[in-house]
Image (cartoon, rainbow, N blue to C red; front, side, top):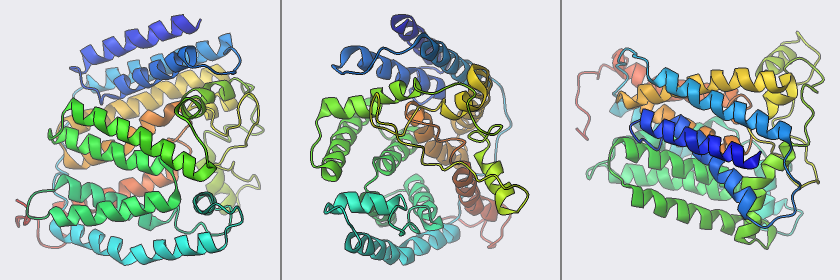
Length: 394
């Protein structure tokens, strides 16, 4: 069954490439490729993980097929052209200033996290603090993190020889955050956003992307080594690219205590906070298991499978695939706002083999979308009376 699923993935890669004009950043290409990689490594790498079940392969086949076919269907449709192309110099200045002003709070966070650490490993203490496990989690999910991300995207999109220092400043701020949070996810997000924006600007080639992937892999192994004192490439790949499939196989379909409590976590959180429900929302940090591998990630199918079984996986693969296909289509039409928004979501698409980063982080996505759209909307409607002025970089 593993070979059959792998063949399905390869076929979907070929179909996706042909339908997307060989665009590697099409959501269907990313989805089929990432699962091809995971399944291939499961078959090739030496490990002690148990055989994956027939139910897993069926569920995965439905997920990949739904994601790919729905995204391809949507991106083949015609949509109206958006006018959200100019972010405006004034709003970019506002975001840049906020980024610089909030940087000291990040340094203070790091100092407090290390001072309060109990593990004896500064890197692990930083990671635990970033996850909120030492009572010092105000930075990790703060609004300033979104500002750092957005300011970097805006400056990268407007990068030229005259304003290069602006891009460097916000890039360094965000990289400092990535390092202090000791998060491979944040480094991956920085890397992918950079690659996607430059790709849409047509300023990089495939060799640059491959060099970047190799650099990121070495960086990830380095971070893992700092946090756990030892790590090798085989164990790293098994843990982060293969083990999630085995952990998914421990789940019982439709076993959630409440209707859609994982899929509709945001709704439960709002209802509980407003006093309309006594049901506490599920924690976004999932429970750890020790067997067949110590992990708390169960692939992106987790919430839908746990809440609604295979039917839920099928329905939500079509829905999410359609959303990704729409974002990709709008970005391909050349609208700056959608290029940056899609660049942000590509990380979410890539990491579907780890866990659900779409519904689980919906609140964050909505905040990001609003804060990203704000400069474009303000400029479009002349909020600062500068919509007809030319930015310095033009």
